[in-house]
Image 1 (cartoon, helix red, strand yellow):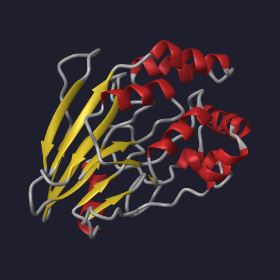
Image 2 (cartoon, rainbow, N blue to C red):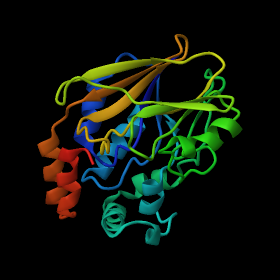
Image 3 (cartoon, rainbow, N blue to C red):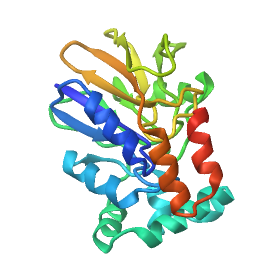
Length: 251
């Protein structure tokens, strides 16, 4: 099965459309959460995401925008964006977002694979370092866990007590690129496809991944998008300017 993995779109319609246009053929789409927040196109992104399939987990910004999470846990800018998003959402989209399931979820036809937003241990946990990855790698029953939340594209792996980290390397800063990562039998993996709408690894391009379960290969992808249009939507919504400028820096 070929799985298109999308995460942390954050209401960035231009980035989402660029990822879909660049994606290789796929059988299903799995969305790892944070569909909204920060960006200026929450309804458009939700509607596009709903068209793509039925496999979703909720993210912390999805919870915040629907009142399921206390905004005191957010920085002021993120909190303002969550409140603005809540006010903008149609009744149908608000109800749909509110009903998204907590991860982990599993998908028929993908044995030993699970999908979460933050971590299989805690849906809001950030898995950034090898230290963060050790517990979910050693305690998870799944061979492969796909997660988001950190906006950092890459993969952690573990065999017994040994752990390792892979981050795809790209040759340009403005073109579409791919980086393949084969999965080895007997190892456990935590794989982050990267953020569609707000990367934080210094690369402004939208990030996503493909998983080929038959070949046991994850393909990490980066694609340029209409950055200016996305920034203009944020500014037109009177959201904090920082949310627009940070997109260009990939931070």
